[in-house]
Length: 418
Image 1 (cartoon, rainbow, N blue to C red):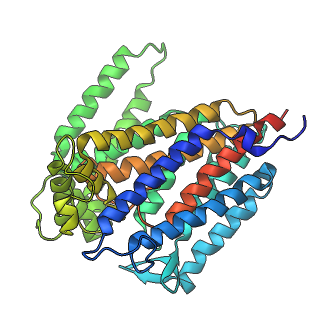
Image 2 (cartoon, rainbow, N blue to C red; image 1 turned 90 degrees about the vertical axis):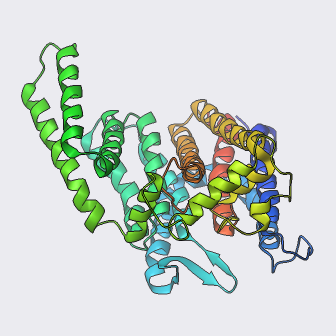
């Protein structure tokens, strides 16, 4: 089949949703960083001026991504992955340390965060690995290789240390699940998280009594003819051991600021002028917006600078204050529509590489979206991750743009995959 113009095959709905989010993001950054004396929107000494420059740079960046042969992304996936690992490792020699984290390369007043681009490379190489017809995630060896692909950049990022960026890679498990990863991996992860937090604030015997009750119910109601009581016993012992170990992990492994964030999440007594300040101020800002908001550029919490880092990790508080509940729901609705659209496009791909990569894109963007907003409304511990297309930053905007438009290119190219 002859090649057709890429522009004829691009999914313009996805491009439109992306464009709307980027424009709304810049408007929000402008409001959150507007100085007392208004200057030009192109003023590069201001945050909104730099972000506008970043947005303009994405235009030729998108053009390059869309004009490159789609097969390049699959053919050189391993090279992209290797380059991202080298960049991550290079931080320990050439990186700049900011607030105890060495996760940036500094170039004058601009910086580059390689962990953002490592997500793209990991998604590409994971999709390439899983697209092999001989690969099956029912095979334990293949599972270990897939987990290893994810684990390598995660270990380097954790050493920076940047737990927020490292945690985002866990979203790729969702893409693995779509490709046949046994569901017990997901259930194990969910149960482990629930037990960890429950054991910090509930009596351990009470937790184990509940676990024992659930396991007994499952045992007697199971439809399997040959239930193995030894397996259930070993599983209960493993759960009990994990539950009793959480106290040690909390006291001896987690950093003080990480423990503070967990305490804040569960309403423990904390200093509202210290570790509890950011969350408390974000809740005040979002709550003060009411149903319709105070109006664009009229947020008193935003203008007063009461919410720290409001143009980055806490950007959604400006949406809540100035646009209100209705505006916040609109933004969330646009994000959800984008996620659904990506999954829809992924399912109609003719190659397994494109399909798997599409699910990786949806998973990464969703994890950023969920964690960023959930932490602001006390549903998740405070972790520094940007809101896609909204939060200030060149690295995150470029990475999210490349991540999404590679998939748009793959989707546009599917007519040539016959």
